[in-house]
Image 1 (cartoon, rainbow, N blue to C red):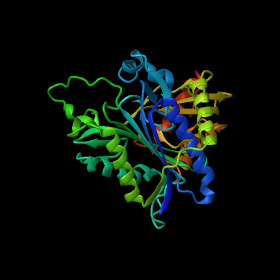
Image 2: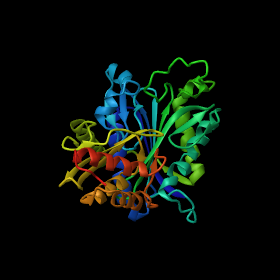
Image 3: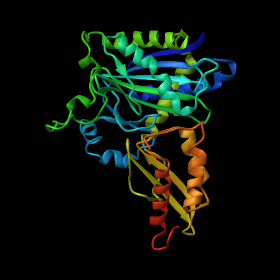
Image 4: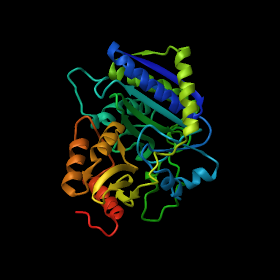
Length: 362
């Protein structure tokens, strides 16, 4: 069996949960050489927070009246998740499930090696089994949500960092929907049944649901992946490391690295929202610096590698497209929410065209 640490966080502040997740990821990276199997964290959140996706531009997200305005108007704290995608609620009524894996195939049979892009497909099955065991058959239709009766009840995303450690996260709307948008009054031709819902509204007997869901999740994942669950509490050093990470998160805030000296492409529509590239040029035709931001889901190692690969390349289609395909097309990387990777190329070249001003960019 695979020995996996279990960490329960009850009524926890969102920043504390994020700090705890980061500490577990670092711990799993260190323990990989000793054959340790990873960690599973269950956190019931408190307070009121808006959680941005890893790559969402802060200013654009806060300016979106459908996404951020309803939450921030009520005084919500703004935080940034380790996983990509769009903004979600991240407070009272939300359960954050985090699976921290030494690698994409860590909890799978030895013969079952998967590329990183299959993370959600393979590791959401325990969540589906747990919710279904409570009396509400759950499905993963693909992309970024889990549904019950065709209504999204959990936002799902994933990450793979520079050490190779993987994070699969489900943001479950237990007693409130995970969406931060206000549910609209549907037009006659629209189907209101596809709007995100609280899991409690779709289950009979919602009393004690959070506790029953916790237990069902542990049972389902242990059975699905052959896990031996170790619920020993964090050590004093681990608790100190979490506190230090939490302090740094509070001090830094949710802002992304500055793009103040860069020119943006404008938003390119994608199935999950938008993507925007920011560039700074060297002598009008060479990419000196590139940032890729948006509502997409991708591994941070791949995004960082791509941004580095584009540095000092000519701002032309063959050079940019070659780097995009080489990096993002690798089996160790993944992207969700882009119909095609050429969207990234188009955005980078549009930003370069704008940055060059009247000079033409090939």
